Image 1 (spheres, rainbow, N blue to C red):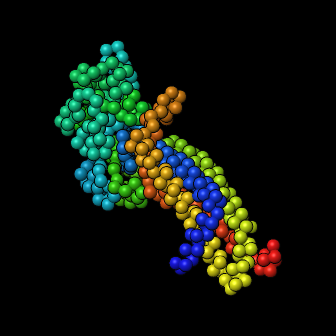
Image 2: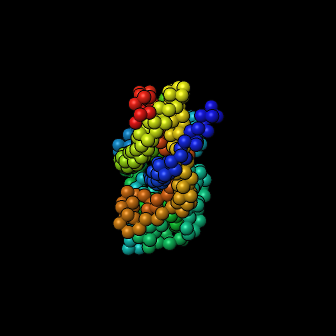
Image 3: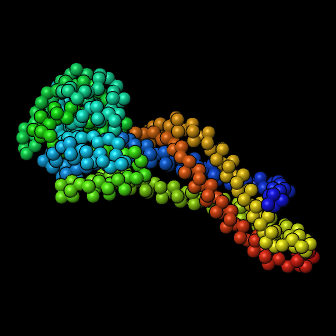
Length: 407
C-alpha cells in the first residue's frame, strides 16, 4: 500500500502545472462555497435566535384556541402540576409562564398600540436574557409593579425612566383594564418589530390589570438540544390533553420565517450547484488530459506485467490526493474569513437595512462556525472526484496495448 501511495504522490507532481490548475479550481470553489454557506447558515441562526430567544422560545404550550384567536379569553389556568408535567421532559430546561395581550399606551400627547407581556422576571431572564438588554434603568423583580419599555417604543412615546405610562385595554371576559405604571427600565430588543411595541410587566401585576388571576396565554419553553425539537414537541403533545392544550414549535409559530429560510436555502443550493459544476469540469478536464497524455505510459506498464486493476488503483490515489489537497487548502483559506465575520458580523445599511427590518430582523450578517458545513463540502468534492475517475479507470480497462505503444 505504501508503494501505491508513493507512486500516486510522485505521479501528480510530474506535471505540476496541470496539478496546480486542478487544485486551484477546487480551492476557489471550496472557498466560495464555504464562505457562502457560512453566511447563509449564520443568517438563518441569527434570524431564529432573534425571535426564538428574544420572544417565542423554542416551544410554546397554549390554549388550543389561542393560536387562531389571540384574545385574552383564550387563556388557561397555571398550576404546579402542569409545570411539573412539562418539566418532566428530558429536553426541557426552562418553563417560562406568560400572559400576553394588547393595550393602548399613552404618555402625554403620544399614544400607541402595544403588546403587553406579564412575566416572572427571574424565570423570563433564563430564556430571553432581558436583564442584559437593559440600556437604562433597572430590571424588574418578582414583586416590582413597574414596566420595561422597549427602546424604539420609548423613543416614539418620548418617555423615560421613572415617568408614568397609562395602559388602557380590555381584560378577561370583557372586564375593563386601565392602569398607570412607572417605567423602571428601557430595553433594547434585537428584532425591530418587537422593539417597536413591547412592554414587560410583572406577571401578578398583569393578571390584576386584566382581571385574569392565575391565567396564562402561554408557557414558553427552552430546550437543551434544538436538533431534538420535533421529538420534544411530540413527547409533550402525548403528555398534555389535546382538548385543552396545543403544543407548538417555533416553526409552527414563525411560518413566514421558515418559508423565507427555505426559499433562501434553495437559491443557495443552486449557487452551490454552479460552483460544483466548476469543480466537476475542472477535475474531469484534468482527468481527460491525464488519460490522453499517459496512454503510452499505461500501455508500457501493462505490457511489462502491471495488472490493470492495480494501475487503476494508482490513478484513483492520484485523484484523491489532488482532491484532498484542494479541499483542505480551501478549508484553511476560508477559516480566517469565517472566524473574523463570526466574531465581527457585517452590519447592513441603506436599503438592505430597511429590508431586514421590514422582516423584523436585526440588520446584521454573521457567519456560522459549523463543522458540518466543512464536512459536507469535503464529502461532496470527494464524490465528484470518484465520479470523474470512472473515465480513466474505464480507459485503462479497455486499453489496447499494441495500438497505444505504436501511438
